[in-house]
Image 1 (tube, rainbow, N blue to C red):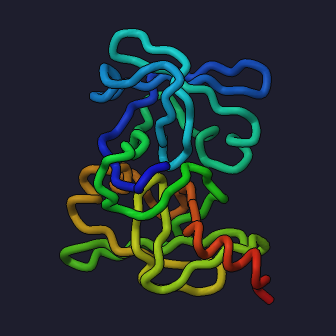
Image 2 (image 1 turned 120 degrees about the vertical axis):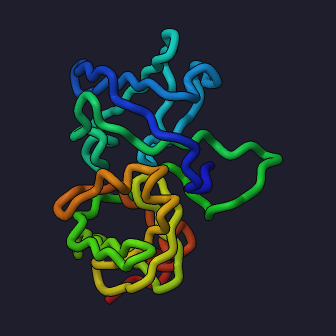
Image 3 (image 1 turned 90 degrees about the vertical axis):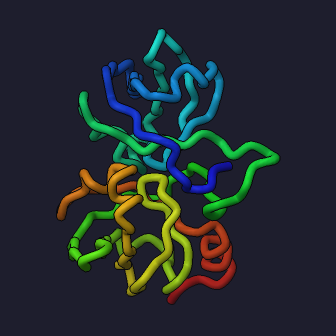
Length: 195
């Protein structure tokens, strides 16, 4: 389980395809603390460390992951948000994040609010996912609060610290991002189908 509080960024150093899988090699300031078989969230996607080589480590994304997330569109030199699993005795600073991305969303607008930024995203309206104003949402692994909520569209406000210390500074209009909807909202929408 994760909390959506990003620890650092990781840079894509290499990408290798093998059948329907993609092996991604990253460099990170946390590499020396990782171990093989550890789960780490990359842009909110829970991936298992399969190899560590000095300052680099490798994870494998399978076809299901590539179909649901933007991991398959990463290129050498891109950066991703990185978070290790929450320790059992750790502080819960964000919200419950499983690392199981539901879908991608497209950035539709970015507004500079002279102290923060408003990012507006849109996702497939055929999905039965919901957002609510002041509810939780995870974007590229970052735990955030929904500001405006509409059908298949929502916005969030990004403070300067988050903008500078995550890959939000790389997001532009048209960028795709990984979305994990709030787990409580997902259960509610499953029990009470949205019309």
